[in-house]
Image (cartoon, rainbow, N blue to C red; front, top):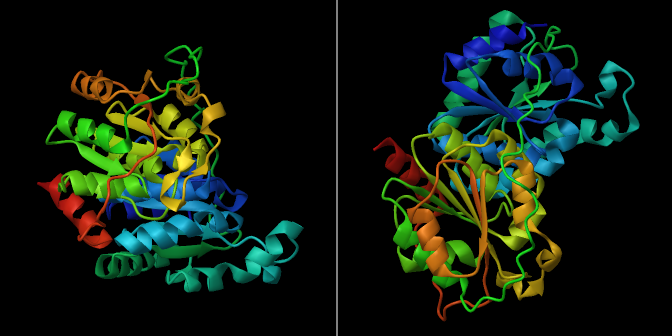
Length: 379
C-alpha cells in the first residue's frame, strides 16, 4: 500500500499536471488528494469517455494528464481510446481499478464480468498495462516505464489498480458552488436558416485570430473546414463522436492564453450532452463552443436527430456558460467572434443541410494533424 501523495508528487515532477475521471471507491484516496491539492487541476467528468477526451486535449496543449476511473466505466472509454488516442497518437496515463477481481473475494454482481475482461480488453485495444504500484519504491520505476512507452509510441499506457493499493485520504476541499451567470430563460431557436455549414465555417475562419485553436467535430465539419483552407491551428476530429467539446475543454485549460473555438454538431453534442455540464462548471474564459444544428446526421445519410425539440441555448446557460446566443446567419457568427467577450461562450447556429460537391478528405493524416497542432502551440 502506498500514500497517494507519493505517487502524485512523483508524477508531478514528471510533468503530469491535470487529473480527470469518474470516482471509484478504490480510487477515493487518490482522487481526494488530487482535489485537495492546490498545485493540481482535477476535472470531474460526466463519464469516462469525456475524461479521456479532456486529458487528450490537455496533452495536445502541452500538459501531461492522468485519467482515473472504475473498470466498469472502461466500456464508456473504448470509443475515444480507439478512435481518438490511437488514431491521433495522443498519449495519456490511465489508472483503471480492478473491481470484480474474484481472487480478492466477493464484490457486487455487476463487476464480475468486467473484472474478468479488464486486462484482455486493454490488450485488445493495444494499450499496454501493468499493475498499479503498491510499494513506495516501485512508484518511480513504474512511472518512468509508462512515460518511456508513451514518448516512444505516442499511445496511452494503463495502470490497473487493485483494492487497497492506496492508503485512505480524506477530502478536505468542499465543492465550490458557482452561481448561474446568466438566465436560463432562453427561448428555443426555431429559426429556419438559408445558410449551410460551409457558409458558417467560412465566417469562423474569417473571424478567427492567428493565435486561435479551432477544433472541428467528426463528419463533414472537419472535411469542409479543411477544404476551405487547411491551417496548422485546425484539428479535424475523426471518430470519437461527441468528444470534441471535451477535447476543447482540456486544451483550453492547458492553454489559457489562447482562444479555443470548438465547432460541434447537433448529433455529436446530443451523444455526450453531459459534457456541457462539465464545461459549464469549469468555465474556461477562453473557450468558444459553436454548435451547428441541421437537425440530422448528414454524413450518414441525413437521418433526423431530436435537436428540433432541444433548447441547446437554455441547457448551456443552465450549466454555467456565461455568454449564450442563438442565430442562423454567418454575419452574426463572424461579428460574435470578432467582438468576443471574455468568458465561456456558447453559440447555437441553425443551418440547413447541404454539402459542397466533390468534398475532399484531408490529405494530412490524423497523427500529422495532432503533431502539427502541438508544434503550432509550442511556437
